[in-house]
Image (cartoon, rainbow, N blue to C red):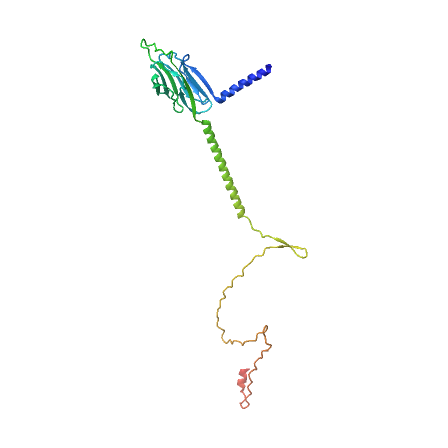
Length: 292
């Protein structure tokens, strides 16, 4: 039984912690009992409830400052103040003032005449929002204030994230990584294309052989037949040279071979020899000697 109760208590505490973590955390500040100036930090998960139940705000009033801050990240926030439904000023000498940034003059002032005070007032991005409650003097003395015992209000101070440092850094880092990855892919594709082009440029086309089987069973490699065109006829240069001196063109000889009629060429007979002249005198000795 003791062990079961211990486990139940642990589960209950864990459930409360998870609910606070998921839904956020709200802290209450009662300025009736603690009115010292300090700066309260809040985020979208942490808000404040500022309560005043009519306590004397003092001579200089009671002021508290709020700023959106995250201790772990450089996020920026906008702080807003709103009055849900609970406010009452019994006198017109009671003031609710809002200060933005480092201004010494209030940006907005509310009194009893400004009912209903349901306006939502916000400071700028990453700016301070100061809330002050102040009461006039009663007139009987410098240190005496008007009666505020029946007055009250409740303010809810919240923050809205307007700049996500982690998200922006993640987007920048992701963009850089994505850009580098895309550049690497482009470079890889270019290298692959260049290597393929070099391979095509150095490749020699080999003729494709086809194995043919003869009737005897032997195999022979058959190369593809390539068609070659017959070269064109070159123009023949005809040069006419004159025949030599004393050249006599021979007669036409019969053509032997195809279409030969079988007739043989007959050489013409020699010219008849001249008969010696018997009536002429014999040659002289000198003529014979000259001829020899």
